[in-house]
Image (cartoon, rainbow, N blue to C red; front, top):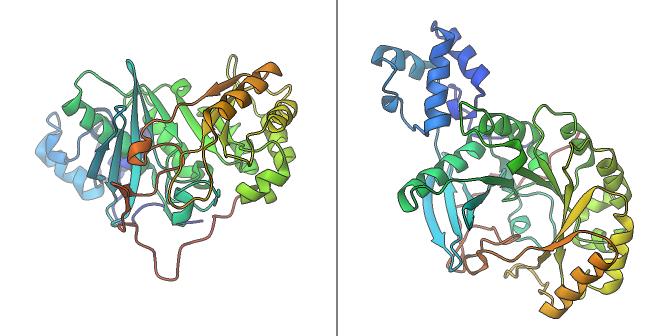
Length: 374
């Protein structure tokens, strides 16, 4: 597996579940509730330093600090779109850059977070794929994206809160399964950020074995699957992962996935001009998804310099959606948000004002290949 996070002797309190933090306090000769107090300060109140924990005495804080550290991401840049979207470029302790996006929609705010530095899946239309994979993010780095965004909103828009969370940023979340699941347990805990599982979505390109594992997990977010083609011929071309787990295997796993009452799987379908946007494609898509408890989000391709694909004309997009609906497939159009700051779906690649940045360092020996999937 690709390593996740920075290796230090001291465990990072951001990356620990509440139970782990309490156990760590015990190993330091403290009562378990001291670990809970510290955990609540970091995950419930966004503390970045032991000195902020005002209800813990200084001697106890010193003992806690001797056995745990508090890591943090640094906000390197905030880009603002004309539509109100914000893109945060965040740097890790070892100097890598990741991106997270805040998307306002009336009283709601959706945050799109990253799970890896880069990505190994190599979808041909995605800018992140062109970066390759450097490493996984640990659970603390994933969760801290939410805390940095909350801190930004408290300054810029007091009263606005993050209502929805989507693991759709840089990386393939199910390639980083353990850290993603730990971050979900942290972020949904009532004593931490307290986010609702029903308002969190994890998106995958279709790692079939991990889908089966996710279906048995104790935390069950909403599931989105990046499908993007109605048949293997097209999907093989634009998503090489399909050569390992083809559409039949993927849909078999989806049909077996245990959905709770009133939940549906979301299929994401990026429309590429002349590739997968025809009426025949719409009819074939409707046919293969017949009987699946699902909806389809149609995403007009968001152009970027690393891709040869184009966005279809509005009339083609409308016709595709209408044809899917005519065949009984619930289909919704996702309006591009933040595309003027390279923050829209498929555009995240550490770009600022149109220029590709270089804080994304590569390890000696090149970029790791995709992690093995059990």
